[in-house]
Image (cartoon, rainbow, N blue to C red; front, side, top):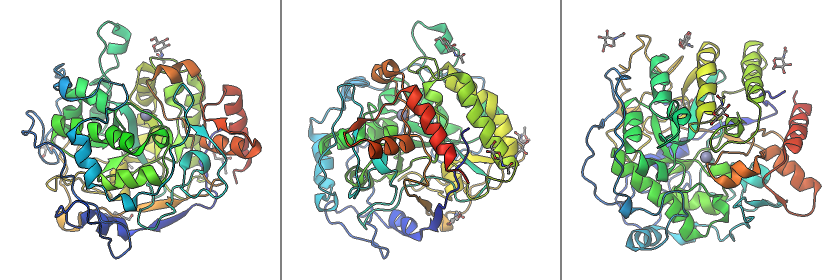
Length: 477
Ligand SMILES: *[C@@H]1O[C@H](CO)[C@@H](O)[C@H](O)[C@H]1NC(C)=O
Ligand SMILES: *[C@@H]1O[C@H](CO)[C@@H](O)[C@H](O)[C@H]1NC(C)=O
Ligand SMILES: *[C@@H]1O[C@H](CO)[C@@H](O)[C@H](O)[C@H]1NC(C)=O
Ligand SMILES: *[C@@H]1O[C@H](CO)[C@@H](O)[C@H](O)[C@H]1NC(C)=O
Ligand SMILES: *[C@@H]1O[C@H](CO)[C@@H](O)[C@H](O)[C@H]1NC(C)=O
Ligand SMILES: [Zn+2]
Protein backbone atom coordinates (compact mmCIF):
# COMPACT_ATOMS: atom_id res chain seq x y z
CA UNK A 1 0.00 0.00 0.00
CA UNK A 2 1.31 3.39 -0.82
CA UNK A 3 -1.32 6.00 -0.68
CA UNK A 4 -1.39 9.70 -0.27
CA UNK A 5 -1.10 11.06 3.17
CA UNK A 6 -3.64 13.42 4.35
CA UNK A 7 -2.74 13.68 7.94
CA UNK A 8 -3.19 17.23 8.91
CA UNK A 9 -1.08 19.05 6.43
CA UNK A 10 -1.95 22.69 6.37
CA UNK A 11 -1.66 25.03 3.50
CA UNK A 12 -0.51 28.54 3.60
CA UNK A 13 -0.60 30.86 0.69
CA UNK A 14 2.46 32.95 1.05
CA UNK A 15 2.42 36.12 -0.90
CA UNK A 16 5.81 36.70 0.62
CA UNK A 17 7.56 34.61 -1.95
CA UNK A 18 5.93 36.56 -4.69
CA UNK A 19 7.11 39.84 -3.35
CA UNK A 20 10.53 38.51 -2.55
CA UNK A 21 11.02 37.04 -5.97
CA UNK A 22 9.67 39.92 -7.91
CA UNK A 23 11.48 42.59 -5.98
CA UNK A 24 13.86 44.21 -8.30
CA UNK A 25 17.35 43.18 -8.69
CA UNK A 26 19.50 46.24 -8.72
CA UNK A 27 22.49 44.20 -7.86
CA UNK A 28 24.39 45.60 -5.00
CA UNK A 29 25.61 42.18 -4.12
CA UNK A 30 26.29 42.02 -0.43
CA UNK A 31 23.68 44.41 0.88
CA UNK A 32 20.84 42.15 1.85
CA UNK A 33 17.45 43.62 2.30
CA UNK A 34 14.27 42.02 3.33
CA UNK A 35 10.78 42.34 2.07
CA UNK A 36 7.71 43.27 4.09
CA UNK A 37 7.32 39.65 5.00
CA UNK A 38 10.84 39.50 6.33
CA UNK A 39 11.93 37.13 3.60
CA UNK A 40 15.38 38.00 2.33
CA UNK A 41 15.13 39.74 -1.03
CA UNK A 42 16.75 37.86 -3.87
CA UNK A 43 18.90 39.39 -6.52
CA UNK A 44 19.21 38.46 -10.13
CA UNK A 45 22.46 36.53 -10.45
CA UNK A 46 25.08 39.03 -11.59
CA UNK A 47 27.96 36.59 -11.59
CA UNK A 48 27.15 34.42 -14.61
CA UNK A 49 29.19 35.05 -17.77
CA UNK A 50 27.50 37.11 -20.46
CA UNK A 51 26.91 34.33 -22.96
CA UNK A 52 25.85 35.05 -26.49
CA UNK A 53 22.24 34.04 -27.05
CA UNK A 54 22.23 30.34 -27.90
CA UNK A 55 20.91 29.36 -31.30
CA UNK A 56 17.84 27.26 -31.93
CA UNK A 57 16.10 28.03 -28.69
CA UNK A 58 13.03 30.07 -27.85
CA UNK A 59 13.47 33.37 -26.11
CA UNK A 60 9.98 33.47 -24.67
CA UNK A 61 7.26 30.97 -23.85
CA UNK A 62 6.80 28.89 -27.02
CA UNK A 63 3.45 28.90 -28.75
CA UNK A 64 4.13 26.98 -31.93
CA UNK A 65 3.59 23.31 -32.53
CA UNK A 66 6.26 20.96 -31.30
CA UNK A 67 8.39 19.20 -33.84
CA UNK A 68 8.55 15.66 -32.55
CA UNK A 69 10.15 14.34 -35.69
CA UNK A 70 13.61 15.81 -35.47
CA UNK A 71 16.58 14.24 -33.80
CA UNK A 72 18.78 16.07 -31.35
CA UNK A 73 22.19 17.42 -32.14
CA UNK A 74 24.96 15.66 -30.21
CA UNK A 75 27.28 18.68 -29.88
CA UNK A 76 28.45 19.40 -26.36
CA UNK A 77 29.08 22.70 -24.62
CA UNK A 78 32.75 23.64 -24.32
CA UNK A 79 33.52 21.18 -21.56
CA UNK A 80 36.92 22.72 -20.89
CA UNK A 81 35.13 25.58 -19.17
CA UNK A 82 33.43 23.18 -16.73
CA UNK A 83 34.44 20.71 -14.03
CA UNK A 84 34.73 17.08 -15.02
CA UNK A 85 31.28 15.59 -15.67
CA UNK A 86 29.81 13.84 -12.61
CA UNK A 87 32.89 14.62 -10.53
CA UNK A 88 32.54 16.92 -7.51
CA UNK A 89 32.05 20.46 -8.75
CA UNK A 90 35.30 22.39 -8.77
CA UNK A 91 35.51 25.15 -6.19
CA UNK A 92 38.50 26.73 -7.87
CA UNK A 93 38.68 29.91 -9.83
CA UNK A 94 37.39 33.44 -10.02
CA UNK A 95 33.87 32.51 -11.06
CA UNK A 96 33.21 30.69 -7.80
CA UNK A 97 34.91 33.46 -5.85
CA UNK A 98 32.57 36.01 -7.42
CA UNK A 99 29.56 34.08 -6.13
CA UNK A 100 31.11 33.64 -2.70
CA UNK A 101 31.59 37.40 -2.56
CA UNK A 102 28.02 38.13 -3.62
CA UNK A 103 26.52 36.03 -0.82
CA UNK A 104 25.68 37.73 2.47
CA UNK A 105 27.14 35.11 4.82
CA UNK A 106 25.43 36.69 7.81
CA UNK A 107 22.27 35.30 6.23
CA UNK A 108 23.57 31.75 5.97
CA UNK A 109 23.17 29.76 9.19
CA UNK A 110 26.42 28.47 10.62
CA UNK A 111 25.74 24.78 10.51
CA UNK A 112 28.51 22.20 10.14
CA UNK A 113 28.27 19.99 7.08
CA UNK A 114 26.76 16.61 7.85
CA UNK A 115 28.85 13.48 7.72
CA UNK A 116 28.89 11.25 4.69
CA UNK A 117 29.62 7.57 4.30
CA UNK A 118 32.39 6.65 1.94
CA UNK A 119 29.75 6.06 -0.72
CA UNK A 120 28.68 9.66 -0.31
CA UNK A 121 25.41 8.95 1.44
CA UNK A 122 24.53 11.41 4.14
CA UNK A 123 24.61 9.98 7.64
CA UNK A 124 21.25 10.86 9.07
CA UNK A 125 21.22 11.49 12.77
CA UNK A 126 18.33 12.00 15.07
CA UNK A 127 17.77 15.69 15.38
CA UNK A 128 15.32 16.40 18.16
CA UNK A 129 15.57 20.15 18.07
CA UNK A 130 16.13 20.16 14.32
CA UNK A 131 17.59 23.62 14.59
CA UNK A 132 18.56 23.67 10.92
CA UNK A 133 15.36 22.26 9.41
CA UNK A 134 17.11 19.23 7.98
CA UNK A 135 14.70 17.44 5.69
CA UNK A 136 16.54 14.12 5.63
CA UNK A 137 16.16 13.80 9.37
CA UNK A 138 12.72 15.25 10.04
CA UNK A 139 11.08 16.12 6.70
CA UNK A 140 11.25 19.76 7.79
CA UNK A 141 10.25 22.16 5.02
CA UNK A 142 9.64 25.33 7.03
CA UNK A 143 13.00 26.98 7.68
CA UNK A 144 13.90 27.81 11.26
CA UNK A 145 15.30 31.15 10.15
CA UNK A 146 12.64 33.72 9.37
CA UNK A 147 14.30 35.15 6.29
CA UNK A 148 13.85 32.07 4.09
CA UNK A 149 10.57 30.95 2.51
CA UNK A 150 9.13 27.50 2.98
CA UNK A 151 9.98 24.83 0.48
CA UNK A 152 7.50 23.93 -2.22
CA UNK A 153 6.29 20.43 -1.41
CA UNK A 154 2.93 19.77 -3.02
CA UNK A 155 0.38 21.38 -5.28
CA UNK A 156 -2.16 23.35 -3.25
CA UNK A 157 -5.24 22.30 -5.18
CA UNK A 158 -6.67 18.80 -4.74
CA UNK A 159 -6.63 16.95 -8.03
CA UNK A 160 -3.51 18.67 -9.32
CA UNK A 161 -0.52 16.52 -10.19
CA UNK A 162 2.66 18.57 -10.52
CA UNK A 163 4.53 16.50 -13.08
CA UNK A 164 8.29 16.52 -12.61
CA UNK A 165 11.38 14.60 -13.62
CA UNK A 166 14.82 14.56 -12.02
CA UNK A 167 18.32 13.79 -13.26
CA UNK A 168 17.98 14.71 -16.91
CA UNK A 169 18.54 15.46 -19.55
CA UNK A 170 18.81 11.77 -20.23
CA UNK A 171 21.71 11.26 -22.63
CA UNK A 172 22.14 8.82 -25.46
CA UNK A 173 24.84 6.27 -24.87
CA UNK A 174 27.70 5.59 -27.25
CA UNK A 175 27.28 1.86 -27.29
CA UNK A 176 24.03 0.75 -25.70
CA UNK A 177 21.12 0.41 -28.11
CA UNK A 178 18.65 -0.40 -25.35
CA UNK A 179 19.53 2.83 -23.54
CA UNK A 180 19.38 4.86 -26.72
CA UNK A 181 15.88 3.65 -27.35
CA UNK A 182 14.76 5.68 -24.32
CA UNK A 183 17.22 8.58 -24.20
CA UNK A 184 15.91 12.01 -25.18
CA UNK A 185 14.00 13.06 -27.14
CA UNK A 186 11.85 10.00 -26.36
CA UNK A 187 10.26 11.29 -23.15
CA UNK A 188 9.84 14.81 -24.54
CA UNK A 189 8.19 13.42 -27.67
CA UNK A 190 5.89 11.32 -25.57
CA UNK A 191 4.85 14.30 -23.44
CA UNK A 192 4.29 16.43 -26.55
CA UNK A 193 2.14 13.77 -28.17
CA UNK A 194 0.08 13.28 -25.06
CA UNK A 195 -1.86 16.47 -24.95
CA UNK A 196 1.24 18.64 -24.98
CA UNK A 197 1.92 17.73 -21.43
CA UNK A 198 4.23 20.15 -19.60
CA UNK A 199 6.55 19.22 -16.76
CA UNK A 200 9.11 20.72 -14.43
CA UNK A 201 12.56 19.24 -15.10
CA UNK A 202 15.37 19.19 -12.55
CA UNK A 203 18.59 19.04 -14.53
CA UNK A 204 22.04 17.77 -13.71
CA UNK A 205 24.63 20.33 -14.84
CA UNK A 206 26.98 17.61 -16.07
CA UNK A 207 24.26 16.21 -18.33
CA UNK A 208 23.41 19.64 -19.72
CA UNK A 209 27.05 20.18 -20.73
CA UNK A 210 27.12 16.84 -22.54
CA UNK A 211 23.67 17.16 -24.10
CA UNK A 212 22.65 20.82 -24.45
CA UNK A 213 20.34 20.06 -27.38
CA UNK A 214 18.02 18.18 -25.05
CA UNK A 215 17.85 21.16 -22.70
CA UNK A 216 16.99 23.43 -25.62
CA UNK A 217 14.36 21.01 -26.79
CA UNK A 218 12.76 20.89 -23.34
CA UNK A 219 12.63 24.66 -23.14
CA UNK A 220 11.24 24.88 -26.66
CA UNK A 221 8.54 22.38 -25.69
CA UNK A 222 7.33 24.59 -22.83
CA UNK A 223 8.78 22.60 -19.93
CA UNK A 224 10.28 24.42 -16.98
CA UNK A 225 13.98 23.96 -16.25
CA UNK A 226 15.35 23.86 -12.71
CA UNK A 227 18.70 23.02 -11.13
CA UNK A 228 19.53 19.63 -9.63
CA UNK A 229 23.28 20.17 -8.98
CA UNK A 230 26.40 19.36 -10.94
CA UNK A 231 27.27 15.90 -9.57
CA UNK A 232 24.30 14.92 -7.41
CA UNK A 233 25.83 14.86 -3.94
CA UNK A 234 23.94 14.94 -0.65
CA UNK A 235 24.15 18.70 -0.32
CA UNK A 236 24.18 18.96 3.48
CA UNK A 237 27.46 17.02 3.44
CA UNK A 238 29.07 19.72 1.32
CA UNK A 239 30.98 22.73 2.59
CA UNK A 240 29.64 26.19 1.78
CA UNK A 241 31.91 26.65 -1.20
CA UNK A 242 31.07 23.16 -2.48
CA UNK A 243 27.36 23.97 -2.26
CA UNK A 244 28.02 27.14 -4.24
CA UNK A 245 30.00 25.21 -6.85
CA UNK A 246 27.41 22.43 -7.29
CA UNK A 247 24.74 25.05 -7.93
CA UNK A 248 26.89 27.46 -9.88
CA UNK A 249 28.18 25.13 -12.59
CA UNK A 250 24.66 23.85 -13.19
CA UNK A 251 23.19 27.32 -13.48
CA UNK A 252 26.04 28.21 -15.83
CA UNK A 253 25.45 25.17 -18.05
CA UNK A 254 21.70 25.81 -18.28
CA UNK A 255 22.30 29.48 -19.03
CA UNK A 256 24.91 28.76 -21.69
CA UNK A 257 22.80 26.07 -23.34
CA UNK A 258 19.40 27.71 -23.22
CA UNK A 259 19.71 31.35 -22.23
CA UNK A 260 17.63 31.05 -19.06
CA UNK A 261 18.59 31.28 -15.40
CA UNK A 262 16.37 29.07 -13.22
CA UNK A 263 14.83 30.27 -9.96
CA UNK A 264 14.19 26.75 -8.73
CA UNK A 265 16.28 23.84 -7.59
CA UNK A 266 15.80 20.44 -6.02
CA UNK A 267 18.29 18.91 -3.60
CA UNK A 268 19.40 15.38 -4.56
CA UNK A 269 17.81 12.91 -2.10
CA UNK A 270 15.88 15.89 -0.69
CA UNK A 271 18.95 16.48 1.46
CA UNK A 272 18.66 20.12 2.45
CA UNK A 273 18.90 22.20 5.58
CA UNK A 274 18.75 25.93 6.29
CA UNK A 275 22.42 26.44 5.47
CA UNK A 276 22.03 24.91 2.02
CA UNK A 277 18.63 26.56 1.49
CA UNK A 278 20.09 29.96 2.34
CA UNK A 279 22.90 29.60 -0.18
CA UNK A 280 20.51 28.41 -2.90
CA UNK A 281 18.10 31.24 -2.09
CA UNK A 282 20.84 33.82 -2.36
CA UNK A 283 21.88 32.28 -5.65
CA UNK A 284 18.35 33.00 -6.84
CA UNK A 285 16.58 29.70 -6.26
CA UNK A 286 13.62 28.36 -4.31
CA UNK A 287 13.85 24.83 -2.93
CA UNK A 288 11.36 22.32 -4.33
CA UNK A 289 10.86 18.94 -2.65
CA UNK A 290 8.04 16.44 -3.24
CA UNK A 291 5.28 14.86 -1.18
CA UNK A 292 5.23 11.43 -2.79
CA UNK A 293 7.98 9.34 -4.29
CA UNK A 294 7.48 6.83 -7.09
CA UNK A 295 10.89 5.30 -6.34
CA UNK A 296 11.05 4.75 -10.08
CA UNK A 297 14.82 5.30 -10.08
CA UNK A 298 15.27 2.13 -8.08
CA UNK A 299 13.83 -0.20 -10.71
CA UNK A 300 16.33 -2.29 -12.67
CA UNK A 301 17.97 -0.20 -15.36
CA UNK A 302 21.07 1.87 -15.91
CA UNK A 303 21.90 3.63 -12.63
CA UNK A 304 18.91 1.95 -11.00
CA UNK A 305 18.46 -0.69 -8.33
CA UNK A 306 16.33 -3.75 -7.78
CA UNK A 307 12.89 -2.45 -6.87
CA UNK A 308 10.38 -4.53 -8.84
CA UNK A 309 8.46 -2.85 -11.63
CA UNK A 310 5.24 -4.13 -10.02
CA UNK A 311 5.96 -2.27 -6.81
CA UNK A 312 6.22 1.07 -8.56
CA UNK A 313 3.25 0.18 -10.69
CA UNK A 314 1.33 -0.47 -7.49
CA UNK A 315 2.07 3.01 -6.16
CA UNK A 316 0.55 4.54 -9.27
CA UNK A 317 -2.47 2.25 -9.02
CA UNK A 318 -3.05 3.36 -5.44
CA UNK A 319 -2.62 7.04 -6.24
CA UNK A 320 -5.15 6.82 -9.03
CA UNK A 321 -7.55 4.79 -6.90
CA UNK A 322 -7.28 7.19 -3.94
CA UNK A 323 -8.13 10.11 -6.17
CA UNK A 324 -11.00 8.26 -7.80
CA UNK A 325 -12.56 7.03 -4.57
CA UNK A 326 -12.49 10.50 -3.07
CA UNK A 327 -10.06 9.86 -0.25
CA UNK A 328 -7.31 11.94 -1.84
CA UNK A 329 -9.03 15.29 -1.50
CA UNK A 330 -6.90 17.51 0.72
CA UNK A 331 -4.36 18.89 -1.73
CA UNK A 332 -2.59 18.05 -4.94
CA UNK A 333 0.73 16.28 -5.25
CA UNK A 334 4.26 16.55 -6.43
CA UNK A 335 5.29 12.98 -7.15
CA UNK A 336 8.99 12.40 -7.70
CA UNK A 337 9.76 10.75 -11.03
CA UNK A 338 12.92 10.46 -13.09
CA UNK A 339 14.24 10.98 -16.56
CA UNK A 340 16.91 8.39 -16.06
CA UNK A 341 16.67 5.11 -17.94
CA UNK A 342 14.46 2.76 -19.94
CA UNK A 343 12.48 1.74 -16.87
CA UNK A 344 11.60 5.22 -15.65
CA UNK A 345 10.66 6.36 -19.13
CA UNK A 346 8.53 3.26 -19.65
CA UNK A 347 6.74 3.86 -16.37
CA UNK A 348 5.75 7.33 -17.54
CA UNK A 349 4.62 5.94 -20.88
CA UNK A 350 2.43 3.49 -19.05
CA UNK A 351 0.88 5.88 -16.56
CA UNK A 352 0.68 9.37 -18.01
CA UNK A 353 -2.55 8.82 -19.98
CA UNK A 354 -4.29 7.43 -16.88
CA UNK A 355 -2.95 10.24 -14.71
CA UNK A 356 -4.27 12.75 -17.23
CA UNK A 357 -7.74 11.23 -16.97
CA UNK A 358 -7.63 11.24 -13.18
CA UNK A 359 -5.68 14.35 -12.22
CA UNK A 360 -5.03 17.76 -13.60
CA UNK A 361 -1.51 17.04 -14.72
CA UNK A 362 0.65 20.11 -15.09
CA UNK A 363 4.11 21.40 -14.28
CA UNK A 364 4.89 22.16 -10.65
CA UNK A 365 5.09 25.81 -11.61
CA UNK A 366 1.66 25.72 -13.19
CA UNK A 367 0.06 24.17 -10.10
CA UNK A 368 1.83 26.66 -7.83
CA UNK A 369 0.81 29.65 -9.93
CA UNK A 370 4.42 30.54 -10.71
CA UNK A 371 4.58 32.23 -14.09
CA UNK A 372 8.16 33.49 -14.12
CA UNK A 373 10.50 30.63 -13.31
CA UNK A 374 13.60 32.35 -14.67
CA UNK A 375 15.42 35.57 -13.93
CA UNK A 376 14.88 36.53 -17.57
CA UNK A 377 11.66 38.48 -17.22
CA UNK A 378 10.54 37.93 -20.79
CA UNK A 379 9.72 34.31 -19.98
CA UNK A 380 6.11 34.15 -18.80
CA UNK A 381 4.44 30.76 -18.53
CA UNK A 382 0.75 30.09 -18.18
CA UNK A 383 -0.12 29.22 -14.61
CA UNK A 384 -3.10 27.94 -12.69
CA UNK A 385 -4.28 26.42 -15.93
CA UNK A 386 -7.28 24.24 -15.33
CA UNK A 387 -7.09 20.65 -16.41
CA UNK A 388 -3.91 19.41 -18.01
CA UNK A 389 -1.48 22.19 -18.67
CA UNK A 390 -2.40 22.57 -22.28
CA UNK A 391 -5.00 24.08 -24.47
CA UNK A 392 -7.76 21.79 -25.57
CA UNK A 393 -6.51 22.07 -29.11
CA UNK A 394 -3.84 19.62 -28.23
CA UNK A 395 -1.02 21.66 -29.64
CA UNK A 396 1.50 23.89 -28.04
CA UNK A 397 -0.40 27.08 -28.58
CA UNK A 398 -1.12 28.57 -25.25
CA UNK A 399 -1.48 32.22 -24.58
CA UNK A 400 0.54 33.26 -21.62
CA UNK A 401 -1.31 35.15 -18.98
CA UNK A 402 -0.48 38.79 -18.77
CA UNK A 403 2.69 39.55 -17.00
CA UNK A 404 1.14 42.15 -14.74
CA UNK A 405 0.03 39.55 -12.26
CA UNK A 406 2.85 37.35 -13.19
CA UNK A 407 5.05 37.15 -10.21
CA UNK A 408 5.16 33.92 -8.42
CA UNK A 409 2.50 33.18 -5.96
CA UNK A 410 3.19 30.25 -3.81
CA UNK A 411 1.61 27.88 -1.52
CA UNK A 412 3.73 25.81 0.68
CA UNK A 413 3.25 22.94 2.95
CA UNK A 414 3.86 22.76 6.59
CA UNK A 415 4.67 19.29 7.53
CA UNK A 416 5.60 17.51 10.64
CA UNK A 417 7.61 14.37 10.50
CA UNK A 418 4.44 12.45 11.20
CA UNK A 419 2.40 13.97 8.45
CA UNK A 420 4.99 13.68 5.79
CA UNK A 421 5.13 10.61 3.74
CA UNK A 422 7.67 11.38 1.20
CA UNK A 423 10.34 8.96 0.49
CA UNK A 424 13.76 10.38 0.50
CA UNK A 425 15.38 8.39 -2.18
CA UNK A 426 15.94 10.68 -4.98
CA UNK A 427 17.91 8.84 -7.53
CA UNK A 428 21.40 9.08 -8.50
CA UNK A 429 23.23 7.86 -11.50
CA UNK A 430 26.10 7.25 -9.19
CA UNK A 431 27.48 3.80 -8.97
CA UNK A 432 27.34 4.13 -5.21
CA UNK A 433 23.59 4.09 -5.23
CA UNK A 434 23.31 1.52 -7.93
CA UNK A 435 25.62 -0.72 -5.99
CA UNK A 436 23.79 -0.06 -2.75
CA UNK A 437 20.58 -1.09 -4.48
CA UNK A 438 18.73 0.24 -1.57
CA UNK A 439 16.15 2.80 -0.98
CA UNK A 440 15.69 5.17 1.84
CA UNK A 441 12.47 6.76 2.74
CA UNK A 442 12.32 9.94 4.66
CA UNK A 443 9.65 8.71 6.92
CA UNK A 444 11.58 5.57 7.48
CA UNK A 445 14.81 7.46 7.78
CA UNK A 446 13.34 9.60 10.49
CA UNK A 447 11.67 6.65 12.11
CA UNK A 448 14.81 4.63 12.12
CA UNK A 449 16.74 7.53 13.46
CA UNK A 450 14.36 7.88 16.35
CA UNK A 451 14.45 4.22 17.16
CA UNK A 452 18.19 3.94 17.15
CA UNK A 453 20.38 6.24 19.09
CA UNK A 454 23.30 5.64 16.83
CA UNK A 455 23.51 7.41 13.55
CA UNK A 456 21.82 5.59 10.75
CA UNK A 457 22.93 5.99 7.23
CA UNK A 458 20.49 7.14 4.73
CA UNK A 459 20.37 4.03 2.68
CA UNK A 460 18.07 1.30 3.79
CA UNK A 461 17.65 -2.27 2.86
CA UNK A 462 14.61 -3.24 0.91
CA UNK A 463 13.41 -5.12 3.95
CA UNK A 464 13.48 -1.88 5.89
CA UNK A 465 11.73 -0.16 3.04
CA UNK A 466 8.99 -2.73 3.20
CA UNK A 467 8.63 -2.17 6.92
CA UNK A 468 8.54 1.54 6.38
CA UNK A 469 5.70 1.09 3.93
CA UNK A 470 3.81 -0.82 6.54
CA UNK A 471 4.48 1.94 9.03
CA UNK A 472 3.38 4.55 6.55
CA UNK A 473 0.17 2.72 5.87
CA UNK A 474 -0.44 2.27 9.55
CA UNK A 475 -1.00 5.92 10.18
CA UNK A 476 -3.21 6.51 7.20
CA UNK A 477 -6.59 7.75 8.24
C1 LIG B 1 -9.34 4.57 -1.67
O1 LIG B 1 -8.22 4.01 -2.31
C2 LIG B 1 -7.07 3.94 -1.51
C3 LIG B 1 -5.93 3.45 -2.39
O2 LIG B 1 -6.19 2.18 -2.92
C4 LIG B 1 -7.31 3.05 -0.33
O3 LIG B 1 -6.18 3.00 0.50
C5 LIG B 1 -8.47 3.61 0.47
O4 LIG B 1 -8.78 2.74 1.52
C6 LIG B 1 -9.67 3.79 -0.40
N1 LIG B 1 -10.69 4.50 0.36
C7 LIG B 1 -11.97 4.28 0.23
C8 LIG B 1 -12.88 5.14 1.04
O5 LIG B 1 -12.40 3.40 -0.52
C1 LIG C 1 15.77 -1.84 -18.84
O1 LIG C 1 16.96 -2.28 -19.44
C2 LIG C 1 17.65 -3.23 -18.68
C3 LIG C 1 18.93 -3.54 -19.42
O2 LIG C 1 19.70 -2.40 -19.45
C4 LIG C 1 16.80 -4.46 -18.48
O3 LIG C 1 17.46 -5.37 -17.64
C5 LIG C 1 15.48 -4.07 -17.84
O4 LIG C 1 14.63 -5.20 -17.79
C6 LIG C 1 14.80 -2.99 -18.62
N1 LIG C 1 13.64 -2.57 -17.89
C7 LIG C 1 12.47 -2.39 -18.45
C8 LIG C 1 11.34 -2.03 -17.57
O5 LIG C 1 12.30 -2.49 -19.65
C1 LIG D 1 -2.33 30.98 -8.91
O1 LIG D 1 -3.03 30.54 -7.77
C2 LIG D 1 -2.40 30.83 -6.55
C3 LIG D 1 -3.23 30.25 -5.46
O2 LIG D 1 -3.49 28.93 -5.69
C4 LIG D 1 -2.22 32.34 -6.40
O3 LIG D 1 -1.53 32.62 -5.23
C5 LIG D 1 -1.46 32.90 -7.59
O4 LIG D 1 -1.39 34.29 -7.53
C6 LIG D 1 -2.10 32.49 -8.89
N1 LIG D 1 -1.24 32.92 -9.96
C7 LIG D 1 -1.71 33.46 -11.07
C8 LIG D 1 -0.69 33.88 -12.08
O5 LIG D 1 -2.89 33.62 -11.28
C1 LIG E 1 -6.26 15.75 -19.86
O1 LIG E 1 -5.96 15.19 -21.12
C2 LIG E 1 -6.54 13.93 -21.37
C3 LIG E 1 -6.14 13.50 -22.76
O2 LIG E 1 -4.82 13.13 -22.77
C4 LIG E 1 -8.04 14.00 -21.28
O3 LIG E 1 -8.61 12.74 -21.47
C5 LIG E 1 -8.43 14.51 -19.90
O4 LIG E 1 -9.81 14.67 -19.84
C6 LIG E 1 -7.75 15.85 -19.63
N1 LIG E 1 -8.04 16.24 -18.28
C7 LIG E 1 -8.55 17.39 -17.96
C8 LIG E 1 -8.89 17.58 -16.54
O5 LIG E 1 -8.75 18.25 -18.79
C1 LIG F 1 -2.74 24.50 -33.12
O1 LIG F 1 -3.09 25.82 -32.81
C2 LIG F 1 -3.21 26.68 -33.91
C3 LIG F 1 -3.66 28.01 -33.39
O2 LIG F 1 -2.60 28.73 -32.92
C4 LIG F 1 -4.23 26.14 -34.92
O3 LIG F 1 -4.20 26.93 -36.06
C5 LIG F 1 -3.90 24.72 -35.27
O4 LIG F 1 -4.94 24.21 -36.07
C6 LIG F 1 -3.77 23.87 -34.01
N1 LIG F 1 -3.40 22.53 -34.36
C7 LIG F 1 -4.05 21.48 -33.89
C8 LIG F 1 -3.53 20.15 -34.29
O5 LIG F 1 -4.99 21.58 -33.13
ZN1 LIG G 1 18.29 13.20 -8.53
